[in-house]
Image 1 (cartoon, rainbow over the protein chains, first blue to last red):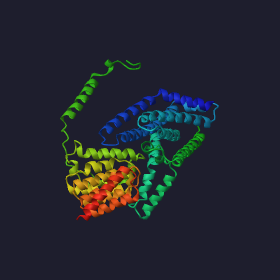
Image 2: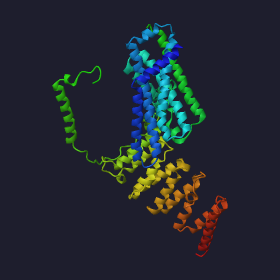
Image 3: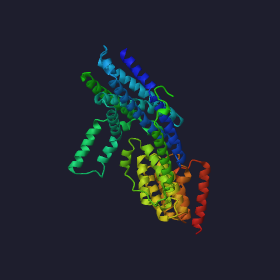
Image 4: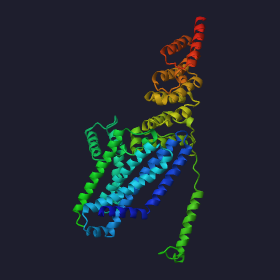
Length: 253
Length: 238
């Protein structure tokens, strides 16, 4: 099956790149930093270590996936590999989705590797949910990075756009809280800005609701909250993938 | 030598010299730079919890704990000559409040408030911190009662302010409903009343406690009954 072959090729490329070394370095750096910080903590040393490692590795996973996808796509465009692929009798959808599946699998493997050190301090149940959520989050980042890489055809531009969208998705609830808070500007411009923030929040993924560190610290989330969070990720991944495919079908080469 | 690399001899001599000079300059600047002296800087104003939540990028638990380390390092770090007992406690309380709001389930801020910042020789600063602990306790009594219990002890033994200690002890008794709260915490008010010489009030409290049926341990009930009898004698013997 061509899509499976493409996905396998993507995984093979990731294995032969610097990605595994960067992942190992991220884990090592997070462990060392957390060990240092927890050694100076007066209380909650385990919680501090867990929170710092989880937050750092989550950010590393997202950055590595975004950078890897963008660089990989750009290299394929530069090497005319994309043109060569398109000349094959394979539908564009299979080509796009096969690559996306490979990148998503890459993200899932990264999530599993990053969850492994957390098993030293976290209960298995919450950690399992956290890992599944991070895997899906990385898949969404891979889909977003693929969309921007194909559209912008620039590594820096694609990484920046992906990370900007991701950061907005993670901070939108906090921005909304500030916009609606007691110190918010009550003038027409202020109210208009609050409305714009609300509209933006509506079209962004709720990334603050998933892969939450408090699951690791304080126990399992409510089932419904977890399911809605993951459903939101999945829905957004479908949207971004459809948009990417739409753009890909319109490409002349 | 890796494939595709030219030998070291192919690097021009001036580049070797430039590299050595660069390294020497870095070491010299580092060595000659004046050591950073302690500054009398006080805490900057605390950011609002909403701003901190935005800055945390969805990781409030991690940021809350890192901010506690920042506060902790602020008074004891090599950069700052102002130890914590001379810090601006209004700002300190604002910082602690913002951190509590960032991760309400973390015990770190209240641990530091009760065990470090409240144990200040300056009564005004101590009162300010005890008041903060009391306010935060009311927001989540079942999780934060240990810190108010410690605050009650500080009010009693350090401030010698028995009415304040009684107020805190009474709050623990009234607002804490968790089953795992030890009876000594719930009965603190009784002992403070005795210290205040309020024997009649203490007698009524113990009587009420026994009547309420909250005391399920037979030994504890016996001790309380004994105490009640002693009080009866003392009150009537006045």
